[in-house]
Image (cartoon, rainbow over all chains, first blue to last red; front, top):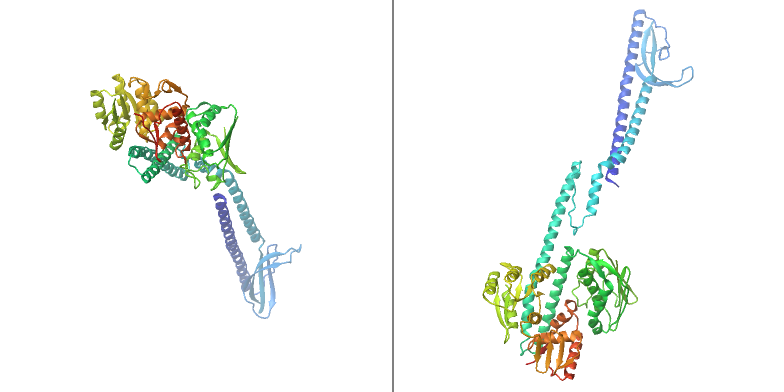
Length: 415
Length: 225
């Protein structure tokens, strides 16, 4: 439920309740006051009658007007004096009419009488009815107004909030420009935007620091790696090495090689992220693929793989360096994660480059395939090849896809 | 031949010097920008190995100085920053080659030799080992004067071995030299073995001695006089 819908519902319920309780008490009080006024009139009438009786010792003539009646009924004993409200049907048209009446004892000519003075209560009731109608009218009007305010005014007032939401949704860490949240006319939203500005600046700052850290750490590692490599190169010149030592040295070589490749991959990713490969030029993908296939020929043969290629002439604007890495990583992937005596099929046609290779099903979830450091248990790579592929594709706005069916992996790049 | 190694990491500098030193090679070392400038002012070198990230200056400035003074030294930039920009500006300033850290010493050695030969500092573009001769300019190999038909990879292999004469060259270094970084990390280096086998066979058939020795588990060594 929307914040304001909820708020206006509660608000409306509360208002209606207050109005109802208020109008009820208003009704009760007003009725009380009006009846007391009637009673006062009746008392005045009583005083007049008593005065008349005490002076003349006889009853005044009964008077019957539309709104006021005076009656005398003979009684054996004096009656109790009391006020009553009663509905009377003695109207000529038989209509029920509420009356307020006062009965009191009168003694005239040595006899007791019960005197009744009654006054119509119709005006009082009419007034009360009017008041109830008015209150219901106010409630209805209030609801209509709330609806209109909710519908138009509130939407307008929440506009800055919607804009802020939109900006948050579009927030991109690797974006070049920091997302700005401008001040608004509403203080709360200005405050919110201010806080968001601070937050995004902090996030971007931390992200930059992290990026620089990766960059620097990778660079700083190059020299120690070079030292290790050079010492190994010198060590193997020793002719007195035994078989065991040689095996250990070989393992060290492999480890250092792996570390430097990992390092270079990380550096490459940082560079792509920093948009250092922006310039594009027309790249002949057919020519590039053919060049790559020649370069990788030895690896294909070493794996006992059969390679088929069906290449159409395709030229597209790309960064040549990234295009080279993209094709290279996809092809290396197809060679590495193949089966003994397997096959690779490369196709290039307008709008699509596809590499298919025989291979075992993925040992992990497909959506993790392009994640950094995601690799199978027997992979010899550092686990960044396909992550780089995806990064390049994101960078160049290409769509990369993967399917697996009947023992074949299929990677496609659409451009 | 006189080489100057400008590198502020002492142990790397020592390693490079120790590998490059040979009968006809003298290695000088400088570990600061200032020291490098002094040495360049005072001595003549055939090739300078230049680390561009020195703590007291930028190696590229040394390159500028060399250019201003029209010195003819071959220069190989060695950088921890494997960036295209450094490479481009280095080569534009007149460096002859660019090598990113980490590298194999055999690769460094091959680059140095190549630069020296390209600059004709070695006097001739011909490498001779008894009956075997390699013409680095014409990219041909002959045994007892007769041309041997080699593939591009076989030629590159032989030249790499020759430049690293008398040294054990690891399979990792060979793989990186011939196939680049991408190939490294392969489970087996069978594909190297195939090329080497073919190269040896061709040379033997042409009447050459078997100069390429296999060093158990480690790599190969070119054992020519």
